[in-house]
Length: 359
Image (tube, rainbow, N blue to C red; front, side, top):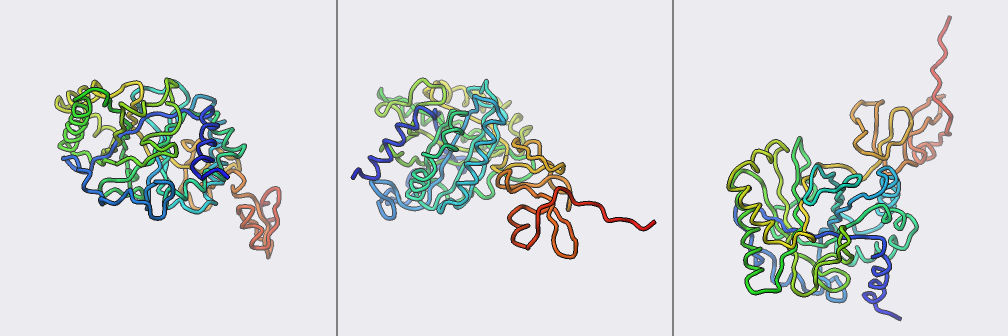
């Protein structure tokens, strides 16, 4: 019988024709870069992992560029997220919608999902269950995806609260550094450190990450780049993953007008492997669908207006969970999800009729 790694590698090779991956960048948490020593020296030890994978929680970053019709992507994504929510292992799941990116997406938009996993083995179990499914296959045909596994280098990083309040925006950097010639790595890393320090000095919160080995055994994503020019070289290139949060898009624009920031960003872009690197500026989105007040299901989360008690739009895990008219005891009719309607002994009806009025 093939090993877990061998079997899973075969699955990923098959999936590679459906997925396309882009590069990843590291996070910084303060004005100065956090050294790798900030992580425990044994963080890559095999404990609850297998086949050389690190133990303990990890962050999955999936940058997804939509190249087909947007609502087709949302339809299959909502079904995938519904299946994912039933799997053990995901601790926190968040999603962002890109406002802008380098390089720009000329398709229907870029969404980035991040999931905090109990450990990498849990991710493997999920992938073995969900990746062979028709839902996953249909979804992956609508996107090019960069998938990378990382570990925060600073305990301050918290996916639950990352850029979720008010007008905050998140900048994600997935960078590929050349290492084939002496000095390349030092120049690239110095450029990244200078850029992160420049934006931190102006008020941005910065974070860096170390990269887990992927299921193929090297540090980085496991399929080809989203721009379909091939993955970064296993030898001669390395990944650098960072994030930065800003109070608002206006605040970020103001910071990036500073001469020192512009200069440091230009130097950084000159130092990386441009075709394999990616920078995204994003706002918080959702992995759920929007149940409209008119009983329609909107697959585009940007269409949702939630907050009116008893009416207006609501969120659901998928379209099948949207509230529907449900008649319960004492002739009370309420808008309940099908499962809740069944749980309370109600019956689905076509509409909640207004009570008759006395003449």
